[in-house]
Image 1 (cartoon, one colour):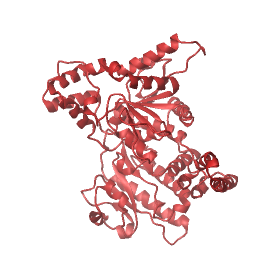
Image 2: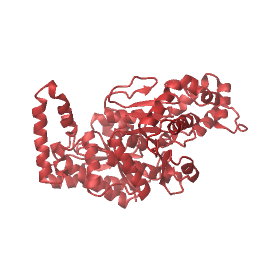
Image 3: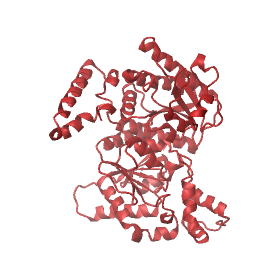
Image 4: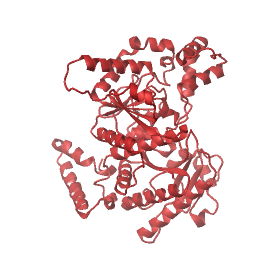
Length: 503
């Protein structure tokens, strides 16, 4: 059975296999979709599917599309709201059925096709005043599609209020991701930490591999093949990289940067992790895919990467332990880089250790074999064991969510990191998908409530009492906001769950 994911972001920036694009019966495709489709305004008319005027749904016909695209007429007609919404969802159901029958091949190591679609009909479609009803109907339609067809669907919410509305509806209707007991319990516990602001992230190469980037070993092998450098008799990846740097000189860093910037669309795992709202993120990756996913959620310009950028109060930052594609000379990959890391990058290591001491570190996509991170973690463990005694038992430094169970690794880090295996399957593609589903469950429980006071989502509230309370809270927010600067803190608190209009 397929799965329905929910993320916040931009479809044109997300790595997927097909997209569903909203339009109208006259086939007016808004300019915001042109970049995602890879066309300009003059080319849009040529995309019109065969039989569009009769069906209002179909596949775009141009071979110049960046990826397969299905179009759906999402405009509200003259009938009653319920029947018009059913008609739109019927066309969405036809589109998803067509995708499943199109013979597409999953990309980027995916086990199933991944189809991305936005919230339908709430922009120019005329359903904005009943967005909550759209959320319920779209979830049900997508759930039916993945039950009937061998594909996954990801609903990509453009706003925080749409995102939390979809997440809330999933949990209320019992549509939360189906995950085994142990990883499910861990996901809910991590979500509680995220809501309390206790969680920081450590992201390894496995997360970006889900977007099609290579592992460290594959990266080195690819550069060696392209450069004609023989590494067959050099067993260690660090030594292989060291020899490559000696052979290539200044071109080595540029080659690494070129290979790790060859992909510009982030994976669904990037989106799910960015949705957790963590403000401190550490990564050994050189690419900027996580920053791109976080920027689409934050909507406030660039997400600073340390040590290159300056953190902004209240906004996330990403610490690039091993360098960045924008600074090829600073990339850490070789044996000598690791040997000299402490002397050259001690301030960065100190930040990582501060997070180990003050946050619960969620580790995803990392094999815990990086010598620099291991040294920093062991120093923190030694410090805690030899330092002042407080509680008898020390809490773990964090949680490792791995694709599959590795018994030796779990025993090695027992008492230091909680170890969670996302999958019991054999194929790497299925393991990666199971990991994404665990993260989807985590994100669902960590989501906030930006939709709560917004009248567009009133039907998602459980009772008349809740709807009346939301109305009263909106009135209170308006009154407090009118009182000026002395009341700003309360105004912000009341605006937080008020949807995008109140923010």
